[in-house]
Length: 153
Image (tube, rainbow, N blue to C red):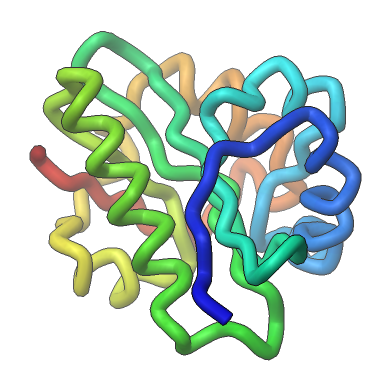
Protein backbone atom coordinates (compact mmCIF):
# COMPACT_ATOMS: atom_id res chain seq x y z
CA UNK A 1 0.00 0.00 0.00
CA UNK A 2 1.16 3.55 -0.73
CA UNK A 3 2.13 5.74 2.23
CA UNK A 4 0.02 8.91 2.40
CA UNK A 5 1.21 12.11 4.08
CA UNK A 6 -1.66 14.12 5.52
CA UNK A 7 -2.43 16.71 8.17
CA UNK A 8 -3.45 15.35 11.58
CA UNK A 9 -6.98 15.60 12.89
CA UNK A 10 -8.12 15.81 16.48
CA UNK A 11 -9.48 12.27 16.16
CA UNK A 12 -5.89 11.06 15.49
CA UNK A 13 -4.49 12.16 18.86
CA UNK A 14 -5.10 8.94 20.78
CA UNK A 15 -3.36 6.82 18.12
CA UNK A 16 -0.51 9.37 17.89
CA UNK A 17 0.02 9.18 21.66
CA UNK A 18 0.17 5.37 21.53
CA UNK A 19 2.70 5.45 18.69
CA UNK A 20 5.05 7.81 20.51
CA UNK A 21 4.64 6.38 24.04
CA UNK A 22 7.74 4.12 24.08
CA UNK A 23 10.02 6.90 22.78
CA UNK A 24 8.61 9.33 25.36
CA UNK A 25 9.20 6.76 28.13
CA UNK A 26 12.79 6.28 26.92
CA UNK A 27 13.34 10.05 26.98
CA UNK A 28 14.00 10.23 23.23
CA UNK A 29 10.95 12.37 22.47
CA UNK A 30 9.55 15.03 24.78
CA UNK A 31 6.19 14.19 26.32
CA UNK A 32 3.31 16.29 25.09
CA UNK A 33 -0.13 16.08 26.65
CA UNK A 34 -3.13 15.35 24.48
CA UNK A 35 -4.29 18.91 25.21
CA UNK A 36 -0.97 20.31 23.94
CA UNK A 37 -1.17 18.15 20.81
CA UNK A 38 -4.76 19.34 20.26
CA UNK A 39 -3.73 22.98 20.62
CA UNK A 40 -1.02 22.46 18.01
CA UNK A 41 -2.83 19.94 15.80
CA UNK A 42 -2.34 22.08 12.69
CA UNK A 43 1.42 21.64 12.96
CA UNK A 44 1.35 17.82 12.76
CA UNK A 45 1.92 15.82 9.57
CA UNK A 46 0.99 12.14 9.58
CA UNK A 47 2.33 9.23 7.54
CA UNK A 48 -0.49 6.73 7.06
CA UNK A 49 -0.56 3.25 5.58
CA UNK A 50 -4.25 2.84 4.88
CA UNK A 51 -5.96 3.95 8.06
CA UNK A 52 -2.95 3.20 10.30
CA UNK A 53 -0.70 6.03 11.48
CA UNK A 54 2.87 4.79 11.00
CA UNK A 55 4.68 8.06 11.69
CA UNK A 56 4.37 11.76 12.28
CA UNK A 57 6.21 14.96 13.02
CA UNK A 58 5.32 18.54 13.82
CA UNK A 59 6.47 21.79 12.26
CA UNK A 60 6.48 24.17 15.22
CA UNK A 61 6.94 27.85 14.39
CA UNK A 62 9.11 29.82 16.83
CA UNK A 63 9.50 33.15 15.01
CA UNK A 64 8.55 34.59 11.60
CA UNK A 65 11.81 33.17 10.24
CA UNK A 66 12.41 30.02 12.32
CA UNK A 67 10.53 26.74 12.83
CA UNK A 68 11.41 23.42 14.40
CA UNK A 69 10.86 19.82 13.35
CA UNK A 70 9.78 18.07 16.52
CA UNK A 71 8.19 14.85 17.74
CA UNK A 72 9.44 12.92 14.70
CA UNK A 73 8.46 9.26 15.08
CA UNK A 74 8.19 6.30 12.75
CA UNK A 75 6.60 3.06 13.93
CA UNK A 76 9.08 0.41 14.99
CA UNK A 77 9.28 -2.14 12.20
CA UNK A 78 8.68 0.54 9.54
CA UNK A 79 11.92 2.43 10.07
CA UNK A 80 14.38 2.46 7.18
CA UNK A 81 11.63 2.80 4.55
CA UNK A 82 12.12 6.54 3.97
CA UNK A 83 9.04 7.51 5.97
CA UNK A 84 10.93 9.83 8.32
CA UNK A 85 12.68 11.47 5.38
CA UNK A 86 9.31 12.01 3.66
CA UNK A 87 7.86 13.58 6.80
CA UNK A 88 10.79 15.96 7.29
CA UNK A 89 10.80 16.89 3.59
CA UNK A 90 7.06 17.61 3.73
CA UNK A 91 7.54 19.75 6.85
CA UNK A 92 10.44 21.73 5.36
CA UNK A 93 8.43 22.24 2.14
CA UNK A 94 5.59 23.62 4.28
CA UNK A 95 8.05 25.89 6.12
CA UNK A 96 9.26 27.25 2.80
CA UNK A 97 5.68 27.90 1.63
CA UNK A 98 5.04 29.81 4.87
CA UNK A 99 8.07 32.01 4.19
CA UNK A 100 10.30 30.70 6.94
CA UNK A 101 14.05 30.93 6.37
CA UNK A 102 15.34 28.23 8.72
CA UNK A 103 14.21 24.98 10.31
CA UNK A 104 15.93 23.51 13.36
CA UNK A 105 15.94 20.14 15.02
CA UNK A 106 17.12 18.85 18.38
CA UNK A 107 17.88 15.18 17.90
CA UNK A 108 19.82 12.08 18.83
CA UNK A 109 19.80 11.12 15.11
CA UNK A 110 22.35 13.62 13.82
CA UNK A 111 23.30 11.77 10.62
CA UNK A 112 19.62 11.36 9.64
CA UNK A 113 19.14 15.13 9.63
CA UNK A 114 22.55 15.84 8.08
CA UNK A 115 21.56 13.60 5.16
CA UNK A 116 18.59 15.95 4.67
CA UNK A 117 20.76 19.08 4.51
CA UNK A 118 20.78 20.11 8.17
CA UNK A 119 24.05 21.29 9.74
CA UNK A 120 25.08 21.19 13.39
CA UNK A 121 24.92 24.42 15.39
CA UNK A 122 25.80 25.19 19.02
CA UNK A 123 22.87 24.67 21.40
CA UNK A 124 23.66 28.10 22.84
CA UNK A 125 22.38 29.62 19.59
CA UNK A 126 18.87 28.22 20.09
CA UNK A 127 16.13 30.72 20.88
CA UNK A 128 15.92 31.21 24.64
CA UNK A 129 12.17 30.57 24.69
CA UNK A 130 12.82 27.10 23.22
CA UNK A 131 14.93 26.14 26.22
CA UNK A 132 12.48 27.40 28.82
CA UNK A 133 9.30 26.25 27.08
CA UNK A 134 10.38 22.76 26.02
CA UNK A 135 13.78 21.64 27.26
CA UNK A 136 13.00 22.32 30.90
CA UNK A 137 10.24 19.65 30.68
CA UNK A 138 12.70 16.99 29.52
CA UNK A 139 13.75 14.19 31.89
CA UNK A 140 17.38 14.78 30.80
CA UNK A 141 17.43 18.54 31.53
CA UNK A 142 19.91 20.17 32.10
CA UNK A 143 22.30 17.45 30.87
CA UNK A 144 21.33 17.11 27.24
CA UNK A 145 22.98 14.85 24.70
CA UNK A 146 20.82 15.97 21.81
CA UNK A 147 22.47 17.70 18.86
CA UNK A 148 21.15 20.99 17.49
CA UNK A 149 20.92 21.18 13.73
CA UNK A 150 19.55 23.77 11.33
CA UNK A 151 18.61 23.90 7.67
CA UNK A 152 18.49 27.11 5.71
CA UNK A 153 15.62 27.13 3.21
